[in-house]
Image (cartoon, helix red, strand yellow):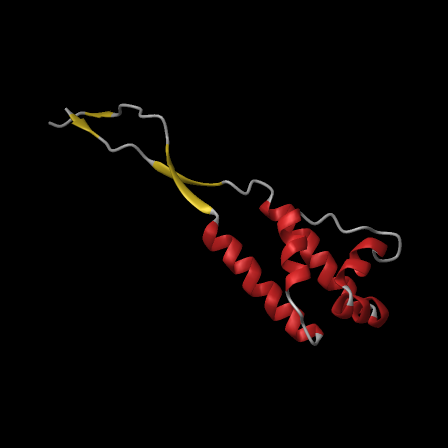
Length: 110
């Protein structure tokens, strides 16, 4: 008999990563289409988040808010570059290898 190794899958402790990504992308999109919102976001991100954009609020996690308040972008390009770096960092920190329950798989060898 031959037994095959237990497969492993990657899981992420950050289960809501795509939602976080969507909210940050919405924030950037609002900054792209509205010069006024962009200026407020670049100079006072706390005010920009509190006021939202055209009646829409941004549901950022505490970690995302902390990140946004900690950077000091000087332009929309700078904000976008910081956002890409932040999202890549999240992706790199996220995967965790988790073994599946062992399941014996038998192979007949003739």
